[in-house]
Structures are given as structure tokens and as C-alpha cells.
Image 1 (cartoon, rainbow, N blue to C red):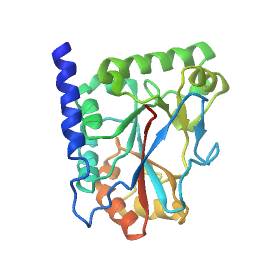
Image 2 (cartoon, rainbow, N blue to C red):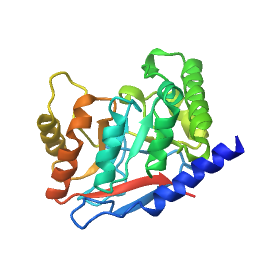
Image 3 (cartoon, rainbow, N blue to C red):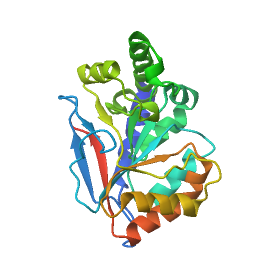
Image 4 (cartoon, one colour):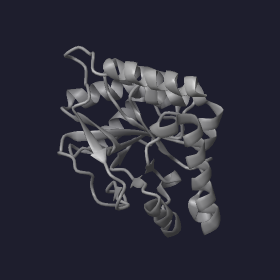
Length: 242
């Protein structure tokens, strides 16, 4: 067990040392924003106040993964452009695909929580909502150890007062969104997903929601990243405050 932890940490250090070894034409990651969970903050103008970003800055986030059919291609596209993102992972997928989950973190991305199996929290009792959070947190701890970030996004953005309070007490920051792409809808193409995202950003920047478990998203990532660069957006990576 100690050797496994050492190997995982060594892989993270090796990845970090090459994190920004990209050419001048890459989109890149402009800066890192440290997030403290001490006050139970929540961000994303769909439901809360804005994150502290300039009008041309975006935070790229993914929900529902990891999935072996799609997440590796998303990671490859991000790596190609030296972009760091945040992946809100489901507990069942963390347990099913531990190596892929570790790869997300080894590539320099942040890993938050997105419930255990994507239930509607408002359809669960308050006690079951907390049990779901505890199970998801335990899965992240088992797979990622100290590298799991105290970040949470509700499934379907369906926030509830009971779980919001439990997250606050536990020192978790809740992330809603500012702009989505509806990449989960049937019949989408890389072009329609990219166009919708840019329309929803509308030059204002903010927290972007995508889904690394979706085939169309894996296909669209090179175009999305290129379009963000062409339109002058800067990527901000969020990570827990030390």
C-alpha cells in the first residue's frame, strides 16, 4: 500500500513537471485559482454568485465520468493544449475505473465529486442524501486519497438545503455553472455543441459545464479548445487552497 501511494505521488510530480511544456500556439492554462472551502462557498451564476474571473476567463469542468470509452480522449485533447480542468466524478465510476480516475489527477486536473450514481438528490430523504455524499467521498478517498478535491456539483444541478448544509459543514465548495453546451442531448455534433457553448458564454466567460462521459464531447474537445483560443478566452484552473 505504501509503495502504491509513493508511485501515485511520483507520477503526479512527474506529470506536474511537464504540465506546461506546450508550444506558443496552445491554448494553455493562464492561471490557477485556489479555492477555500472554510465558509461553504458556492459559485456559478445559474444558481449562485460568480467566481472571481475576468470577462475573458473560463473554468472548464466535466461531469459524470470517468468513462473508459471517452475520458481518455478528453484527457488527450486537454493535454495537447496544456489545459487544466476539473472533473466532477461519480462514486460508482471512481470505483469501477480507479486507474483512469488516477490518470485524471496525474495529468494535473482537479477531481471533485458528483454524487455516487447520479440520483436526483431532491428525490432522496435528507438522511439518504448525506449517505450518498459519504459514499461518494469514501470512494474518492479510497481511489485518490489526498488528491481528491473538496469540490461538489449536484446531479442535474438539483441542489437541496439539507445536502448544501452537510457540504458546508464538511468544508466542501459547491460549483454550479455559468455556461453549458447541452452535450448530453441526442443528435448533437461537435459543431453544434461548440456553437451552443460559445453562444452561452456570450463573451462573458465563467464556469463551463461539459460531460466527459459523452461521445460527442470527446469528439468535440479539439474544436472547443481551438474556438476558445480563437475567441480570446483564457483558461483558469481551480484547485483547493493549501
